[in-house]
Each structure stands twice: as structure tokens, then as C-alpha cells.
Image (tube, rainbow, N blue to C red; front, side, top):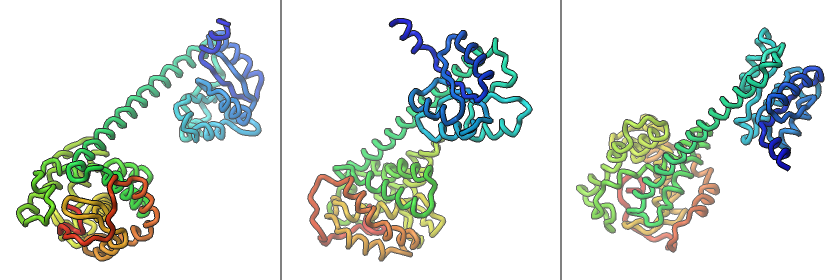
Length: 361
């Protein structure tokens, strides 16, 4: 029983080579070196074994029948659960074309032929140690990223709670922003960046007095001048940050109240002078503000809000973004249903709107 447990605790190495006379000495050398070893004659057989029990490391040859080493490596790397699995290619140093191709598809390291059987176990142990260190660092970096994103989300939500009790506005507008970003050709990476940066768009509201932020009536010109400073306050809070995520949040906080015709704030940017991330968030923010209850207004119906967005095409909003928005209405409606405010909806009530580009303060 203990012998079986000891065997399972040994690092598990999978050798993939169609030549028995290559597998045998490699298997014996690794077995004597304290490893548990399995063998496969080709990539297809190895792929079945990998899915049944994930090895700690794979050593593979390039030229094999049924499925070669390159295709096996590609299949392994397509699976997220195998992203950190060390893959070692056994090849000769003069096969530069294979080495270059192997690096491109995700091979971790190389063992050169002819293999020094006496040193093989030491070499494999070194590769395993390096791979585990790399994976540990990647996991710590991912944990730090998730922590940073959670702090950003909570800070944005703290600002939102001040004039929207449920805090669902930032969830809806960030998902709508990312959806619009996809429609206009943002990469998957940039869509994800937008999704996580957009919740900080109104972080500057932390610095706006309650007497203005929560006022149930139309703001005076002096009060509105103070309200507009939430964009620059947000920009200052997020300025000089090294991460791409926070730099994007800074851009959004500063520019999401700019207008396509140049009549927005704080800098009166016009057209494509306004960063795309800001233009996307502006449209998503205004639409959700129109359909949400605020201290100064009851919610508008979707129909009335869409009409207001269309009315702002070419003035408040980029016309192409408005067209994309209209085409995406069914998906936008699903987002609204996924993040509902815990409050009744009163339909198409008439309310005096703050004059800041379509209904969002």
C-alpha cells in the first residue's frame, strides 16, 4: 500500500517516440532517477494518455506516424488546463527549423540527441523545477491582477452607491460598453480591458458634495459646474498609474462626458479626438442612466431612451456607435435583465433631465 502511494508521489513523465530503442533507455534512465514513466508510440496514443492522467512533463519526438510531435504539442496547448505542462522536444541541435517551429507552438525546452542517459534525470528534474517556479509566479501574478481588479470594481461601486443605491449601473454600463467594443472591432483583450476599467468611470463622484449629487431637482449653473469636476477628479485619482488597466480607467473617467460635436466636458474634445474607450462608455453610460432611477429623475422606458440616443447621433454620440447600439438592442436588453435594480419600474414618466449630454450627471 505504501509502495503504491510512493509511486504515485513520484513525478510522472510521459515519453512519446515511435522508436522502441529510443524509449527503452530513456524510460530506464528516468525510472532509476526516481520518476514514474509511461510510454506512447505516437501523438494520438499520447493524447489519450494525457487526458486520462496529466503528466508532470512530456518528452516527445518530432517525426512519428499517426500524429507527429508538433500536432500533439498544439493539441495540448489548446487546452487551458495544460497551459503550464512542460513539453520537452528530443531533437538534434542542427535541426534549427524544428526548434524554431517548436518554440512557436509552445515547446518548453529541448533535449539534444544523442541523449546522455546518465544526465537525463538531472536534466528533467531541472526543467520540472523551472516550470514549477514559472507556474507559481504566473499564479501569483494572476492573483495580484484579480485583487487589483476587485479593488477597482469596489471603488467604482462605492462611488456609484452615492447616487444609485443598488450599484447595478456600473455592471450594466460596463457590459454594454464591452459589447459595443466588440461590435466596432476591439480585440478580445481590449474588450476585457474595457469591461474591467469601465466601472471606474464615475469614481470622481466621491469628491462631489451630497447636496449636489443627491439633489432631486435640476442643478443650478454653479452646481452643475461643480458636478462636472467629477471627470477631472476621477482623472486625478487614476493618474500616473503604471498598469494598462488603470491607465484605461483614467482615460474613461476623464473623457466619458465628452461629446462628438465638441460640446462636452471637461476639455471640449470633438469627434475622434475623444478616445474610443471614452466614446463607448459615454453611450453606454447615458443609456443606462436614462433607463435607471436617479435622485433627480424616475427611469425612462427603453423605447424613449433609445429615441433619445438616436436624437443624439452626430451631436452627443458618434453616429457609427449609435448604429451599432441599435443593432445590439436585443443583447443590451439581456444585459439589463441580468443586472436588475431592486426597485420598481415606473414606465415612461416625464422628468426634467440634467443637461449633460443625454441624461447622465
